[in-house]
Length: 181
Figure (tube, rainbow, N blue to C red):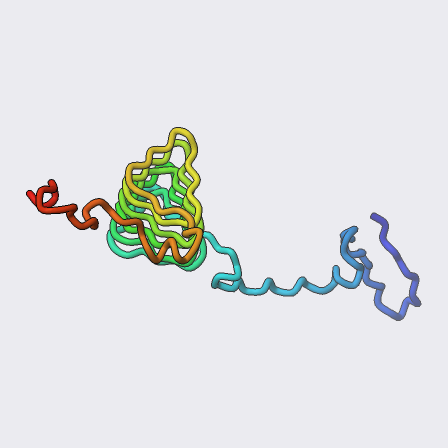
């Protein structure tokens, strides 16, 4: 770099050497002299899209609740309740009743799952329990032992009057099999 030297009369002190500040191509020249403003603090809550993670070495016994998304790769025994989304990792072992918005299962779950939106069972997932969801997606290779209630009834009248069972019918007469038992 070059120095700029200014000649002054001898009775004055020598001039200071001016060294230009480094230039940043994308920043305006005025901004290089001012420090950048401090970063705004991170907000917490549903609007930030935060994900909480429980690693494989974490074990929880009891009730787990969260607000946004939770990824579990450890062990939980008890109950999981949230309006958020739950992802159960391939190392996870869950023995719990699950009530969330949606669940994606890669690992093992022993317990019932009730969601408002969607349950996804990935290819190596194992679910022993019942499912209640608007949508159930199951990849080939997933294990599901239980019952499922998926979607909503087509009409309100069909949901209000369930079909009659054979046990609900009245006996045909005194010599019928139903009357004999």
